[in-house]
View 1 (tube, rainbow, N blue to C red):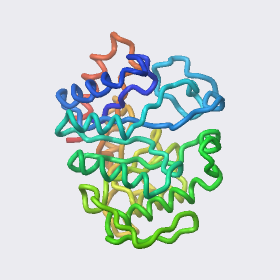
View 2: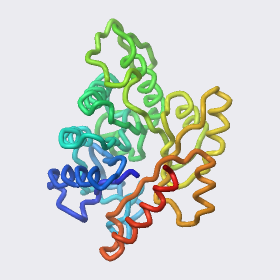
View 3: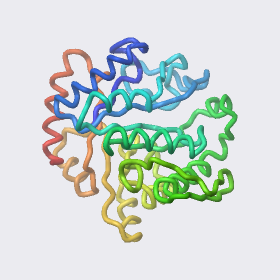
View 4: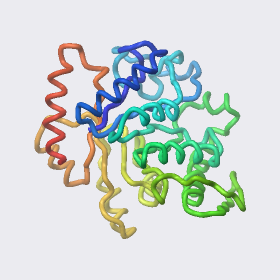
Length: 286
């Protein structure tokens, strides 16, 4: 089970970063498999273009985010969590790769993977807010191309010494990039998003250690492409899994291996019942 640590800051102050570190340690003690922290670098007024959620404790979807929402560095926070935990996986959710140079972000992620003994999981994404790209001077319309080059460049950097890469947007040669990440191929990569377009499928099949959708898209096409590419079924994450046992069995047949839960949206009197349900669901995936 993966626990989403608060990103809307309704359970504690946005300045209480030690509180998130403490919650992660408690999640490990409680038996959770992983904790997730997402990111933005900056937000603009358009972050709330679709209106704010009626319940501010719900997971903030694209276009429903208060521009003033705190977004501390996920890499820094996960590094602090790595220092006080020993087993739990550290999921860097929604790492907006195109907003940095691949050498810089590969250095940060690889160092965190090494520090944590290979417990890092990275969810690279292009994200959705054009104003964030504009503030950082990155072309929003090329974000998909930039992400593709990141994935190709990371594979080289975490494998070769010296490393060389030549792309349309990034290039380097004779780069000595040490130390490498803990795992020979770099941190585990989960890929996914709100939809299942062809380009996303190809990224998952080529680079992904897992599929982490936003919502519950059907992963059947993904598993078919994976089989065509000669790889086994791609492990799939499901968010807030249903109570219906038949649906759970269907998910398992499609490769679902992980469940992601967020407790921040639960009313106080529902936290314990939801935990009991989640524990029951988790048993089905063991």
